[in-house]
Image: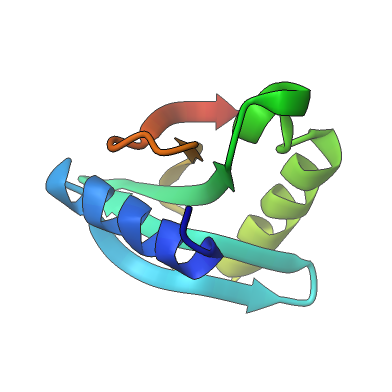
Length: 111
């Protein structure tokens, strides 16, 4: 399995084919990092990419616990505070498990 940045590139390529447009990669602030920020029509989408070699211990999805969700939301709040207008937004997750060819995309993964 590829490293984290390769997984993020794979997820970005997959989401672009689904009609999303890249806004930012690896957005960092004092609260943490957001792997991808993309736009789907009028919605700003904050995306966490997770890769796991196998499903042990719950796999990729289980690794996005409540603590990680709070960090992502706090980082998104910093990003949004710098925009002149607040757009509709959501949090998605893209999971890459083992050697699967197609990423698993979960829209509205958490509030």
